[in-house]
Length: 116
Length: 113
Image (tube, rainbow over all chains, first blue to last red):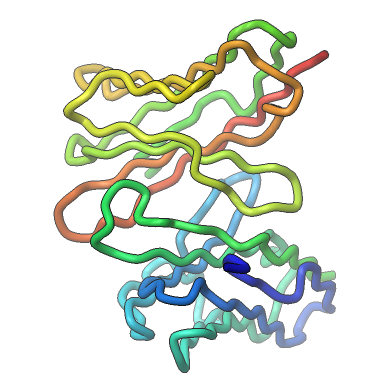
């Protein structure tokens, strides 16, 4: 398996522009998570989906952030409009429930977002 | 409020010596604890875990110790190697309800040759 695939790896955009981050989870995993990593807060959970349905979006910082999962193999995280304080590394992760232990929790390589 | 705390942002150790990374938690409902390792430009990867019914779990050079009364766990790496240089995240979760782990802020370990 290719693992969790995220694109793009790097994104530099100007303040006010729309940014879309993409994620392809591991086939067969029924949970998908979006995290943001910053020096100040570490790994923050933004939102997670179960069977393509958003379960908890309480970590989404503002209405400027939105996430969708139209099918089991694809999810997007959108920021509109983007601001310099959104600069961070965004990780997508997927897992499968019911297997115990680590639940196969697997992270993608992340998207480093820079908003100038 | 951080429920999982890694109070040391960085740690520097000589190759061959022991590395000890510490983690404290506040939620007494946490009953499963995990450590993840992250290299630059990569996502975190699972390293080792421990259930609250145990106080020690060992996997090769890596051992995790859990002190439930103190709500404290630590990761020991013996002997440390330069390839262990990475950011280590402590995470904790509950068995009931959502099993989603809560992560600490991470500790950057540098092992000097």
